[in-house]
Length: 175
Image: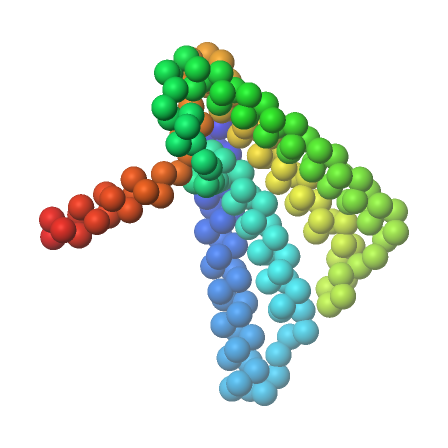
């Protein structure tokens, strides 16, 4: 899974770089050379969609999504683990519903055969990132579920903004 971990990070980094480079190129062409490419905005949107769907999976993997777990953290490790397993199973059900809907939508767009407005690419090929992205999210939730069931962890380890803010404040005060 390390390969997938690094691939996610690489795709997110490359996407940010590519969107920035495209926007910069368009600004230079428009304001210096009084011209531009018609497809730049659309390609930036496509790259942004790719980054979002890969980023959702990455966020699940590193536990950066916001969650309300104040009550769960008061539970004993065993009960916290059970509640976390239930939460992951519910998340997998949700991801399954969204993935099925995304697959149906992509299939309908494939049957219609519409292309993007400014690029000669069939729209369904770009929209395929939706079910692929949610499959990646399902994989990440599957990994979390495995770790919960095998006892490697007892909770989801969600982002704790309050703790992060307190650490940052302590570091600032120490400096």
